Image 1 (spheres, rainbow, N blue to C red):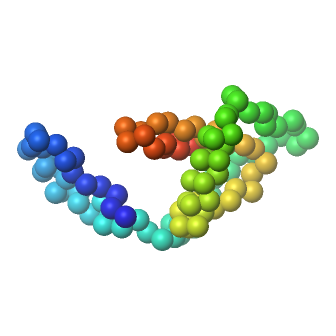
Image 2: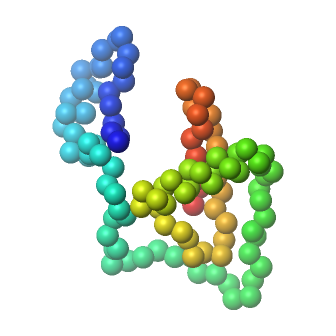
Amino acid sequence: MILFTPPQTETPLHPLASQLLQEFSHAFPKEIPSDLPPQRSTQHHIDLIPRAILPNKLPYRMSPKDTLEIQRQVEELIFKGLVRESLSPCTVLALLVPKKDGSMRMCVDS
């Protein structure tokens, strides 16, 4: 899977954009890595207050179709090894945003 491809438009790229893409070509790998990055020496976490009630309520209602699409995308990302199941007791907000081609993009706020 290619992460970055120059836009396929009729207008050429701005010379500055072309120069930046060439200069930082090492930042755009040809394929997505098959595993997660290595563990860092400092792992971030959120300190929770003991016995406090967690605000695990859905921020909005979701249609069954959207729920199935999010489940499909999450399962695909887990299968590819790009994400892993969270052990956090808190929920993570995920939204589906329509793309120009009609498919849906999952946006996660965590």
